[in-house]
Amino acid sequence: MAAVLQAGINMLRDRLGRHLDTARQIDFSVSSHNTAFCRTKPHTENPLKRKNEVKEIKEKRIGIKNNQNNKNSNICLEIQDDDNLKDSNDILINYLTKNSQNSIFPTFLQVTQAKIVNPKIPILMQNAHVFLDSGAEICLIKTSLAEKLKLEPIAINNFKATGVFGQSMVRRMPIFDFEIKCINNESIKVRARGVDENFVEKLKTIFVEKIGLDKLNENRIPYEFVEEVTPEILIGTSVYNKIMGYERLQNGFSVIQTKLGKVLSGRGVISLNVNESKIFSMENVEKFWELESFGITDNPLNEDDKNALELFKKSVTRTPEGRYEIEFPFKEKKINISSNFAPCIKRLQSSWAKGNKEGVLEKMKESFLEQAKNNQIENCERNDSNLCHYIPWHYVYHPQKKKMRIVFAANCKTAEEKISLNDIIYRGPVLLPDLCGLLIRIRTFPILTSADVKSAFHQIGLKENQRDLMRFLLPKNWNLPPTNLNLAYWRWTKMPFGISAAPFCLAAVINLHLEKTAGEFGRELRRGIYADNIFFSAITTEEGLNKCKKVIEIFKEAQMPLQEFISNSEIINKNFGDKALENNTKILGVGWDVKKDALIVEMKKN
Image (cartoon, rainbow, N blue to C red):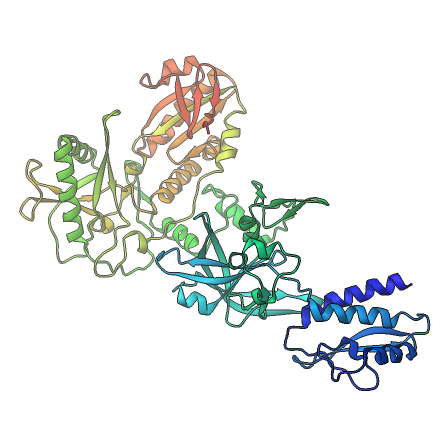
């Protein structure tokens, strides 16, 4: 039993060591306390006399009382009666008294100093006391330090903190990004919550760099090296493991080797196996059937997409030749946008100068002449009275392919309203089928044929009332730089590519045409069209040939010529195939070996 008491006294001695140098004092009343526990004895007596008095006391047990209501309350060590112990109080108490006079036994938490850097302004650097806390999940920084570093909060969020005994509180805290400079010049990025008050009280520590190795290795370190500091930064486990240099896994967690085995720590990625269920309402069913004809089966529509669909249905018409004409779905009936004339001149001058330097002016000119020949664009006069808007353009030229492509920038913002043409037009819903599903469907039959709609966007007419909003500038004389005296005014008569709503309008027109004219085969084609790419399958060669004839006639009715036919059937290729296409082509970006009828996925080397 004496050994048990000895262990208890030793534990108490450790506890005392943590408090002997704090603001709390050890205090005893006259009658029920033993002054052997006092740091400073209230009076001096004959040690022999005191020893005899101790022997006469009944056997005692040591306990601790701490009044938590008063922050600076005294720690009271009370001696309670216990008849089970015999003649050991005098020995144990004197032993503890001897140690309390010569040594204390503090427990130091991990506190250090580090340079904190503002990553946006690296010259802003502050030395700060850092508390490394492996038990904390997040990092903290005092806002006063953040202000010194001129750190700007990246966000302000509510955080719920849970402490000991389940106590929790909710605080609205800013989030700061900064860097800690390591002694090897490595910088560790930290994201921390800002706090106004001290997140811990003053902590005692000994800074290793301030004490020599000779002192550090002594049995007892002189008290003069103990310092009290208030940490300005708390480093939680997410960054703690990086600082400690623990092995880090690909999932983000760190592995720590301990004498109890390996321990996983830090922040990482955990995959969740979630069982999902869906409940369909009548509204969802109605929406499915309402949108199925437009190619939408799984994407919910927002209000903007609904408005775009309604405007498309109201505006789409067909010419006597069968061509579809549309109006772009503008967000407002009254269109308010400036001409954007000046930026267009500057962009034209830049493109001309670049083209002249690269020797491709003639190819640029031919590209526009080809569009004019196909009635996709038309020449017009300058008109300052009506609402006109000019779209800037630039070219992209591939020397290997010797192909010129003109790109119109409808996202160019005006100087007056700071808006672009795309800003005032509904983009419209995405009417494309699932790409993965399409790739699977085209492999379900032995014969596959692919074709493209030639210049698909330019096969849809643009109504007269919107053509002045689709103007652009060209040089009158391509041999001279564009100036105010050397300008030609043009506008689109067909749907230009570069308008945000163009992909939606193209898909909507094709789906509408197939629904009205193609019957059951049209339903099959709708599931096999991705933008201007058309895919259809067959079981026999004869069926494949018949479908090729049908699909050509169907799209011809809409004034949409097809090109680049290719199939895994040699007979279909001989009758409809494009000889310019090589054996190895692509389907939706995936390589297709036509002779082997194999899809080829290239794996990138690390």
